[in-house]
Length: 352
Image 1 (cartoon, one colour):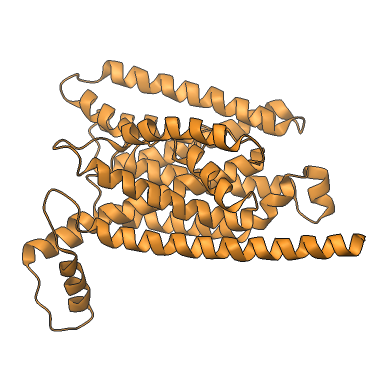
Image 2 (tube, helix red, strand yellow):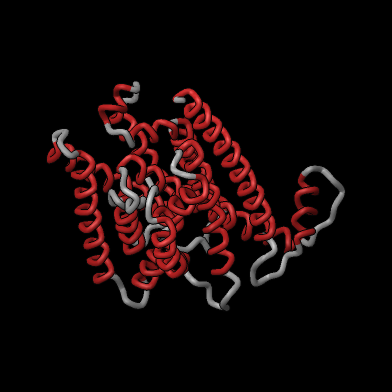
């Protein structure tokens, strides 16, 4: 009898795995189609055939393309679309990873203060009139510093007792501290010059992203994603507790540290370029969990693809609906908050 139940359970597990693989493949195709369609959206109309002509031209085919359209594709649409994809998948994967290691569905990428620290670094760079690259580096640096400070406080206070809880509380303190520093900078900033610039950056936008910004983003994002992807199955083991994880050959403390470093790097990198964009790291992992289940072998890739799709859709709305572009942080909050309430009512159980 027990053997029969075990066989049925194994078959059901294999069936779910195949189903999830099909779903993830379908979402990947949807993302590719959306990326191609996004090149034709905007205030200046670019026919989708121009994109294929441009691709063919770069492959050595004898095809002609309007120079204006070529400029828009290479210098405007391409960096913006890729930045939206990288930002969406980085924030969503970071949120899913944090939720897994803290075993808390309400955790988001800014739980340890990375977003607040990056916001302070960028605000400080703006008020000091630094060039864009230095502003991005300051945002990235202070994002890392804020998380390091949270870990330091947790290490001093926790002493291996309730480490996870102490780490979350330390993150809340550090985040509040850097938010206060941002308020001080906004109070001191020129209300007709620097203050609007700081405020707009904090609302989140990728309207000014250039190809050079992609170089700054893509290396750390890809490296950290690869690391999280390789250890994603181990996150499942953390749900049993540290002692059980150790019995299964997983060093829970070491794994938690690796994931915190990678998730922080993901968050700090994209926030330093795109500004503070909320709700993605909180909502998207829950949506992915409802589609493919809590198994992190499938949850991480599904979350990454859904995050990229979501932010790319939001960015398309931001640059097409109104004459004046809407900051992404505003749109993600307007869409994410009620959608999160819907997910709570729909899911209720089994999120972690």
